[in-house]
Structures are given as structure tokens and as C-alpha cells.
Image (tube, rainbow, N blue to C red; front, side, top):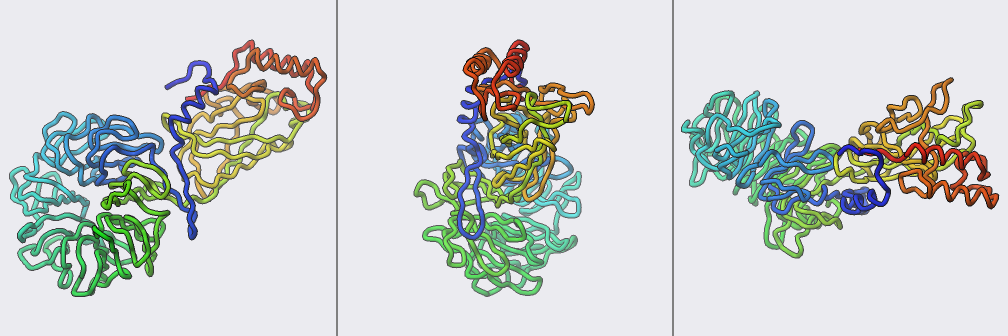
Amino acid sequence: MKNEGFLLKGNRSRIIFMAVIICIFSAVQVHSQNWSNLSGGMNGWVYATTVYNGNLIAGGSFSSAGGVAASNIAEWNGSAWMPLGTGVNGQVDALIEYNNELIVGGRFTNAGGVEVLFLAKWNGIEWSDVNGDMGNIVVSLAVYQNNLIVGGYFRDADGFPANYVVGFNGEWFNLGVGMGGSQGQVMALTVHNNELYAGGFFTSAGGSPAAHIAKWNGTSWSPLGTGISNIVYSLASYGGDLIAGGLFLSAGGVSANHIAKWNGTTWSPLGSGMAGTFYQYVFGLDVYQGDLIAGGLFTHSGGVQTNGIARWNGSSWSGMAGGFFNGGANASGAYTVTTYGAGVVAGGLFTTAGSTGCGNIAMYYEPQPGTINITAIPEGFYDPVTNTLRQTDEFTLYLYGAGSPYPLYESSTAFIDSLTHTGTFTFSFAPSGPYFIVLGHRNSIETWSTNPVNYVGGGSISYDFTNSQSQAYGNNMKQVDSSPVEFGIYSGDVNQDWVVDGTDAGLIDNDAYNFVSGYVDTDLTGDYTVDASDAALADNNAANFVGAITP
């Protein structure tokens, strides 16, 4: 929403309170680890996540995301959740980007008002089918050799015979004779070393025995040794190996508790794998900062308590900031994990991630301190004769989300030097990404950057408010010098209510009358004396209705 005029600080405080400042942090020993609740998350289970056009997409069985109506699928833009049109009318189980469109699989029959059975696509504007309807539920998707690969419970694709797996390149095509067995479902698909791998609840692939996992080389299926003892729910490529997760207890005849790796020849476990009191499943796999992330329904990994999500560094398991809880329910855990931005997003069934309350989705990240160098001039402090400030003074820099409702992520204080007009602000927790940067000063108007600025954790960026009026949102600065051309943030907001008015002028007049001096907020010119020059500056800005301008 565009702001006409200015936003009062009291209103801003209520907005920040309602937004609940989405980054809530909890530190543990080995790493500085944090969970963010992504604006409260969903009111139902999350089964699938992916990245599409740079934004996070989450699907599952829910009717709202971040308090916004969203039918089983929603998009996170870094600050807020948004629906994808009117969504779909049933559970979403699989997501992937293909040919610049979002492909969605699940248990629905309608997408955006269009009749589609179990598979649909979203082009960023509207929903449509993918070459007709599937014969049954879709639960897995992959892109292999520029083709869309679809797996699930079906035996046909729009009438085209297909046993639980099928390819699409504008037309449907078979991958051999597909899968077989008492069930046959393909629950997981991934590409590893330029070959397609499928896992699930089948005992044959391409007409030959293949226990719950098989490889497609573009022309035929083959087993991976003697296979896996039970259902495979997730697959990933990590460290040169194929990783499989699921319900099983052995792989290739070797004990492997719900997770195992295939090196092209043999199976081996990842430590002692996963364990739990009631449930032991691995549903989601991805790679984050060189480590394998596993999500599922389990309480321990390699003997370490991990609570539904764990991290494998190639030799041992560790927890991730406490893991997940669901108000005492035994089934809490992650059904999907996806690397997104500087973190990894987990979705599933849980109401707490670490110590952070959330709604079935959360983002984990390890913040790396970064800096922002700000060049700025408080209007009243500037001396155009010497091109210096009369004081080196303390400022506060805020990082607000790039999209509505513009939640506050973090703030930092630093001194801006009187000679260079520059200060360095350090941020310890904010994840990398776009933010509006907002500069505050004890007697100046808070000033927003024109556009979001891409902050990089672990790095350093610079922003100069002085070289152009357009550097401030709404051009909300005043030219303070013509040679060189310099712009300054407005002075006079003594009571910090985002507007210069009679209240500020009254405070200055009172201190001037009483000959107040020293380091006081009513000294707008920075000469350590409250006098007529300060009063004139405030009166002029009040007469011109100077106030904060925000998105």
C-alpha cells in the first residue's frame, strides 16, 4: 500500500506487534542455529515444498497460510504468504518447476476452477491441466533429460497406459513397462549421475525384479543390487552417492535403519540411522551447506536426539536446533525439506521448531554476521562550509521485509563519522535476502531506502543516502549542499513519532528558553546548544508537513 503523507510511529508499533517479527531465534551449542516461523505458517499439514521463480512454494492440506486464505498451496516471497489463484481442492503431494511453470501433483480434481485430475500446472497467473488427466494420485515428480517425469498410484495418463511412472515432453511416453508388484506405487524420483532413480512400493521395474528402488538410464530399468527391504519415500544425491530414505530396515542385505546410500555398486548405512518410539520414517531429503538434511517421523539419528529433522556431515548425525514438536503428539516431524535462500525449509506436522512456535512449516538457517556501510547526513548537523557534520553521532539501521506487511527482522546501531558521513552497521541474525533499509536518528525522521536492498550474510554492502534525493523512499530528503551536491535526512522529530510538528517545536522552544545545552535531542544542529537555529529548523519542517514516508 502506498503511503500518502506519513505513517505515525504509534501505528508502526502496532504493525510490528501484529507481524510478530517473524524471525525468532534460538541458539544451541555447536552452531548458531535458528528457526524462523515464516509468518506463522499453515493451519494444516505441509507435504511438499519447492522453489519457483525465486520464491518458496508449499503444498499440503491446509486452508490458510500466514493468516491468508490459501487452498492447499501457497507462495512465500520472503516476507509474506500469497495464494496461487484459488488453489486446488485437495491435498498437494508433489511440486517441481518445469519449462518455467510450476507442476503440482496430488489428490485434487480442480485447480483454479479448472477440472484437472491429480496433476496441474501454474504459469504464475492461471491454472491448467498437463495434457489431460491422470488416472490416479500423483506423489512424485522429477525433470530428466528435459522431460517431466511423473510418479504415483496411477495406471494411465489421460488414457495412455502407464504403470505408476510416465514421462512427458509435450506428449506422454512410457519408461519401459513401468513398475509392478502388489502395489507398485512410485513414491520418490530423483536424478543422480545423469540417470533417473525411482523409489516406492514396487517389486519389479521394466518387468525385472527390483525391490522398492530402480534406475532408468534412458532406455531400460535396472535394480540396485538386491534393493531395499521396504517402502522408499525419498531420494537425493549427496557426496557422489545416491541416498534413499523410507520405512525400511535394510538395504542390499545390510542393516540400514530407514536411510542408506548406494555408491553405484553396494549399499551401506549412514551411521545407525533413525529410530523412534512409535514412528520411524524418512520422508524428505536435501543438501544444505554441504551436509545432508533428512526429515521424517523419528526421534533419534545415530543415537542423537533430533526430533524429526537431522543433519549428516558425511560421518555423523547431529540435531538442528531442537527439531520439531507437536504439543505432545507422537507424529511430529518433517514430510519435506527444501534448500531455500540461505536456509533450509521443512514442512510437515509440528507446532514448534526448536523454541519457536510455528504452523507446520519453518526455515532453519545459520546466520553469518554481515555489515552495511551507510552514508548519511542529518540535515541540521551539516556544515556546508566545511562539508562536515558538527557531531559524530549514533544512528540505528533497521532491516524490514521486502514485502507487505514489511516485518522487522533486525536492527543495529553504529556511529556515523562527522568527516566521512559513513558508519558501519553489523547484523548478526538476519538471513541473506532483500530488505528495505531504514535509517533512524534521535532527532531526525526515519528514512527508508527507495527499494529493497540485497543484504548478504557474511558479506558487506554499502548504501549512500547523500548522493541523490531518489535514494530515499518517496524522495523524502532535503538538499543540504550544492557543491558538492548532498542530501540529508530531515531533522526535527524530537519525540520520534515519525512527524515534525508543533509538539517537537514546543520541546525545542522550552529548552531554548531555559538555555539548555549539551548532548540533548532538542539540539537539531549538533552545536551542543538549544537556541533559535534549532527552533527555526523544526518550525520550517513542521510548516512543510515533513514526516516519514513508507511503502
